[in-house]
Structure formats: structure tokens, C-alpha cells
Image (cartoon, rainbow, N blue to C red; front, side, top):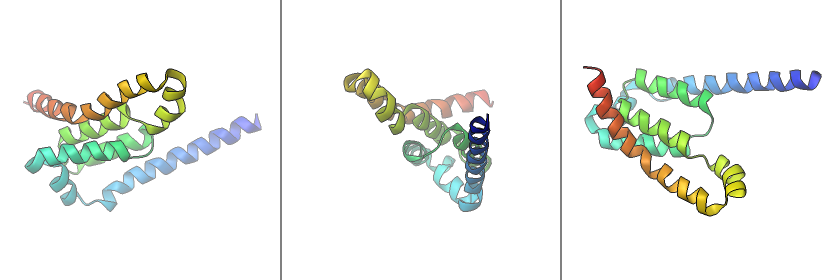
Length: 136
């Protein structure tokens, strides 16, 4: 019972820390910079930046979605945020090396990994287009 309680306490502290870090993105990256890098003026660059950030960003959904919400709130367009979310959820080096490659083998792992790396920019453009249709 004590062991379970310690694990639960540790998980809550980790979750709280990740949410705090995600909320600090707003403070560390000013809204003007977000609008410039991920805004409407240069959508292509924004999607590429979102894609790259999604590939290298650590953490799970508890960190990812508060960051995405802050980006949208500070002026980022949906396309770059969709590219970030898609890249982060499709590609995970930890999952790939820990579970996929040992259990499924490298051919299947790479056959899933390569499209997962290439697809987020396409989905960013498609998502931006769909968002513009839906918001009319």
C-alpha cells in the first residue's frame, strides 16, 4: 500500500511539473515571436517549425497539449500546431527503441517510422485547409 501511495505521489508531482513547464512556454516565448514563427504570414515555415518541434519535444500528452493550447492562444495558426501534434504522436524514439524494434523487428519499425516522420507537414497543410473551411 505504501509503495502504491509513493508511486501515485511521484506521478502527481511529475504531472504538476510538466504542466508548469508547458505553461511557462507562454512566458519564455512571447506572443509576437509565436505569431511570427507559427503565424499566417509564413505558413510553410510555421509548419516546418511545428514539425521539427514535434520531432524533438520531450514529454507526453500532459506536456504536449498545454503547449499546443498556449501556441494557439498566442497567435499560432492551426497548421503548424497540427504538424507539431502529429509529429509528436506519430514518432517517439523511446517507444521505437523500447517496444517496437525489439518486439516487431526493424523492418516493420522503419516501415512505420519513415511515413510517421514524413506525414506531419502534409497533415499540417491539410488541417489548415480544413480549419479554414470549418471556421467559415
